[in-house]
Amino acid sequence: MSGPAGVDGTSTPSRGAQASIAQASIARALAAVQPFGAVSCLPDWRILDATGPVLELLDLTREQVIGQRFSSLLSGPDRIFHETHHAPILRLHGIAREMAVDLRAADGSARPVLLTSVLLRDAAGDEVGIRIGVADARHRRRYEDELLLARRRAQRAEAQQRTLRELLAVLASAASVEQVVAVLRTHLPAATTATELTLWLRGVDGRTLIQLDDDGAPIPGTDRPLPTSAAVTTDGTTGRVRIPLSSGARCLGLIELALPAEDHVDHTDLLDSLGRQAGQVLERAQLHDEREWLLHAIAHDLRTPLAAIGGFARTLQAHGADDETMQALLLQRIVAGSERLTRMADDLLDTAAAEHGALALRRADHAIGGLVEATVRDHVGGARLRGVRLEVEDRSAGARASVDADRLRRVVDNLVANAVRFSPRDGRVRVVIEHVDDELTIGVHDQGPGIAPADRERLFEPFVRAARPDRGSGAGLGLSIARQLIEAHGGSIEVAGEHGAGASFVVRLPLGTGH
Image (cartoon, rainbow, N blue to C red; front, side, top):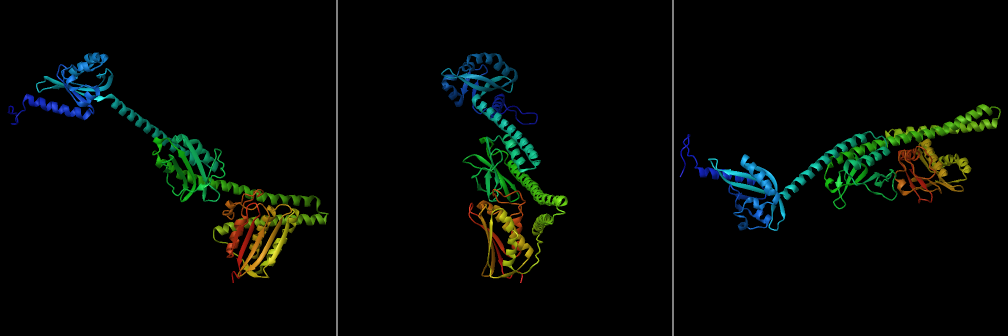
């Protein structure tokens, strides 16, 4: 039967119905916030019912708890807490939130729980019961621990991101390869909590990476292929994070980090930015180092003949005026020094011209054998002083070709000078000119230490010199210019020989080039 009509003409629920609605609402609220179980009591705290999780937690049956006072489920100290705090707060506010107590299990052991109690009243405000939500405190503590751990991870991630950004700023100011390596080794482990850092840089062959030691020096025998991807990758087996150091499509190095497990997926975007910026800075630093080395090498090369010219000129000025023999000798050496300076200037100019595709040849028809023999004769005296025997074998049968004679002489001059320089005392340098089919070959063979296979690919690049023990400190333009000049003639130049058993350079020129 419905209750009396309200002022708006609708019926008003009875007191019992109102209490039921209120209890249902409170029950829904409790269900939303209490994940574990519940205990229902009368207003005097006698237990009406307990849900399964609570009974299981206490290892009691429903019959054992129904009719008992709720305080009988509490441990000794918490019974006092219930009487002095829990129950009064509930009576005063109608709700007592997350009271931490220990329930007493059947074996007497304590079960830590959190209680959220609601006092149920009917529509008239009379107390009709108490509903107690029970949450296992162990679950709550685990949840709180996880929240705390997540917060710490977030704080650590924020700190690491900040440190990585600072590292990027420091890295941007690095001016040399050594500085780049030092910055990465010093700052990156702290920025990423890495337990291990391994640094690789691209080797001189341009196709492999070489591991660096703690001082930044290459470790022999650690070559490995260049990475196929410029993206940051994680090895699921070893847990290592690999950060390629790339500039555009070029891979200049690789960083391998061993990170704690929780950090493996953090900061991938920052690590990717780090790899790309480090690659660009590394490329800039390499260019800076090469420029510094080149300036030093050119200055060294210029200083040697200039010092000789100055010394001969001062000697001539002081003592050679009345001695025609000394005067002729000093003048000869001054001229030789100036010619050497001219060749160096020509090398630099031809290198620049070749890079811009503007290398022009002044061709004419020449007997190649005679041109080569004349060039080799200029080295006989120097070879004799070094104890090296210089031999020429002309098998060209007078074959002729259209060549730039001055440029071809420079090629032969460079090859023969290198062969004499690297040959041991009492060694022999053979220069062989041959005519085979439609091709002329000029071979220069020495008995020096040879050239390692790893050096051969880059031997003809500008400013690169092979790792030979007495290579000196020149700018490394000779072989690069030689290749450019020969290729401008339509020919080729190659190097052969076994490491430790001499080197052989062979120039190939097509007959009739330019006709």
